[in-house]
Amino acid sequence: MGLSTHVLDTMHGTPAAGMTVALYEVGAGEEGEAGAATLVKRFVLNADGRSPDGPLYADAALKRGRYRLAFEVAAYFRARGVDLPEPPFLDRVTLDFGIAQPGQHYHVPLLVSPWSYSTYRGS
Image: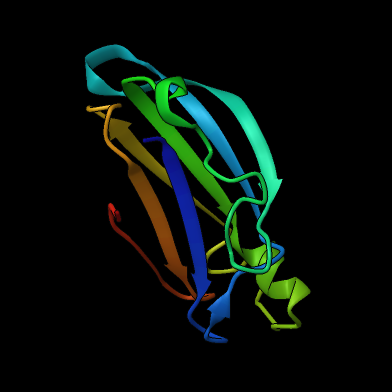
């Protein structure tokens, strides 16, 4: 079933085409804390605000565990001509999440502006 993401720019009402995103596998740390993160892939969102290569993990490649998506929010909005303060309120948005049932599809959308964001487990 796999893992996917989708980013919507709520300031402009468009997909966040051109935003850089990184996917990490996160090891287990002590006492429930996140451990070391290993970069799996880095990509730039396409015109639909999605990974240009399709699912981040397809079907059997997705394993039970902890993951992180890191979205380069400030760089994206600056590239769109938004005048952000230094430092920006949101620079990089990181979402740490767990995959408990790798046989299901996990969709991790991000709705974002320079001042807020929201996420949920989509379908």
